[in-house]
Length: 499
Image (tube, rainbow, N blue to C red):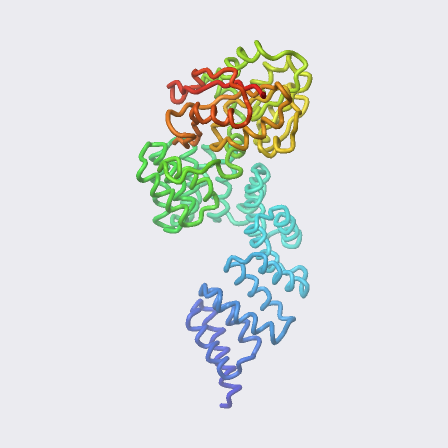
């Protein structure tokens, strides 16, 4: 038998082993075949597919690139290279490869499906959704397209539409643990808790070792304040998948709610080690618990996310549960010193509790807040002439001599370092304008991040900032700001005057 026939037989043996799932043995056969004929494209292409199955992604990339160097029109090689690039956390490169394959065969379902996965990795959800709809049009019975569509819609916050897509997936494949679990995520996001638990249970019944279902159910139980049950389910998730960052995160939060700080910190730190997608938020929580390396501000997006989740019950909660009287208390002092026809800026305006009181004094009144859903409620009240979704310092930065009054109630609890804010407020005020705000009190130091994830500030810190920014202190009154777990939280009500 000549060398060509030997290489051919090794290649055929490799194919048979691949089909049986004996990938290690198949790889050996392909490599031996390539020792004889190094540049045979079909052998390189099948070796690439085998190495992907063995999770040897760097080797797979090398094999695919060799195949492509011999034949740029080899669509399978472009597909395999894209899969390997995506597995190596290079989704942009993966998409380039998939697009090369699609130039050769535009309606290639396998390539389009893998492109969807890369787009999801990049959080390019609109594009991923378009590709899913294209796939569904090409092959309506392909269950993975319906599942991916449901997953993407959940990520986009369109949970009702996600349910429709996932129901289609389940019709096509009733024993899909993945689809049942993702349907549970839709229900959890809609706060339909009984229905979500039933979906997770169905997923676990189908696939008892499906870590995602255990973790998602644990997260739902956490939301329902069933902390011991949440811990039990997330513990099972990490037993099944020891590198599951999401499950460690839920465990950390559950232990935190139970005031068990040591396991809370340990699990949150493990989530960070595993590169949880909310790593910035987790590090912020850890800083509040450990009281070291405290940041001067929360991570970007933290406050907006917090209040958008809280929007539907925001006003009733702070007024009825937290006994929040700060707007009335500060207004009682302000109304004695401000006139009418004022240009007013309400920083962190929320739903407009302070704006309602100041409206009779306003020639114009502007509200600024980070949370879009909160601003929707403020807009319905018709208090403000203009509303802006913006960071307060980014909004204040360009303003010069624009306002007679700037107020910031229960806002500085979400910002540690106030030096930029004082400087920006001073610049934005007209001569003789007033700056009214509240802080939660701190005995020593400038500011401190508390376990409530709110900052407290000392009166001395604010007094120094006032002096350094040419403000005169009109009043600094100690008083109750709100309640926390039925206990009064004291702080300071400041009114400053621009000299």
